[in-house]
Picture 1 (cartoon, rainbow, N blue to C red):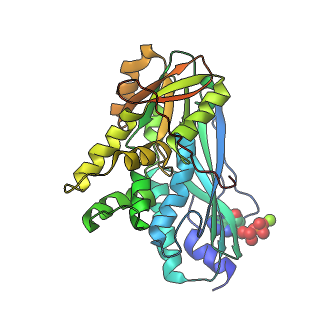
Picture 2 (picture 1 turned 90 degrees about the vertical axis):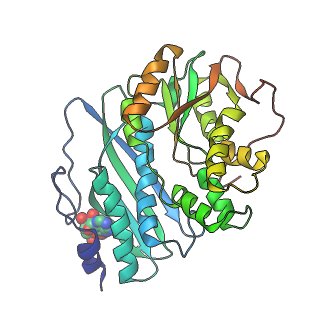
Length: 324
Ligand code: ADP
Ligand code: MG
């Protein structure tokens, strides 16, 4: 099968919203008046972002999910995406499964595949998403204000716990691993929550490299500091871990590292004024996503991590950096 047959068979679909999809030199998107286009790219590289033997349907899901997560963090509604793909060989069952996982998530979000590029080479997947947000209403990293509450969605650390179990670093029974593994391989982008947080949150970011590290980007962009209660985030993970392994307990250090610095969560970390507490919980409820208050924005620069009793924690929580 040649390049163009491959594109036609696996990646060409009729478009409904885009003015022009796959097949010409460019795709054409009609932009709704008064809206801004939100654009983001994320690349997945074999051996670095996923294991070579990962289920291709899950890989297709994740390639789009991590991009939709960026739209979620901006409060943007998904519209369309492109797919740039380097493939070592044409493996039809693999491509079928990959496209299946990718396009199922795309359909669930009304996000159309409108173009891309296909080439030979080590397996590498780059998706670019396009979304829209009313002009001036995007959630930015720079909007946090002193006194704002800090929240995280979902249960941070589950993806990292699954990764550690796959690497044999923590013991999980097969049923427990089966329960956590989708959090690593098929993350749920918090698009619905992001949309509900427009006009409610003052800033937002999605957690790809670790909760505290990504929160640090908000602090830097906003020119503020923060105090975070490590136990608030760790308790969420402890409850989830307990429900999947009823014999024995995980040590708190492991859970804390996973929750605060694990990465690959694709949860949202966001800030909102204390006057918005009810609105935040209404947004969480409307989107079927838990939002937990984990700290407060402060004027003093830097990030202070405390335990449930307010005592400062000494250890560092380094988040993931490809070049550190
Ligand atoms: P060009 O040479 O003009 O860049 P290509 O021959 O690479 O165009 O691609 C032909 C068409 O197929 C274009 O519309 C392009 O967007 C689309 N396309 C190529 N690869 C993919 C892919 N992996 N997924 C979706 N569309 C693709
Ligand atoms: Mg061209």
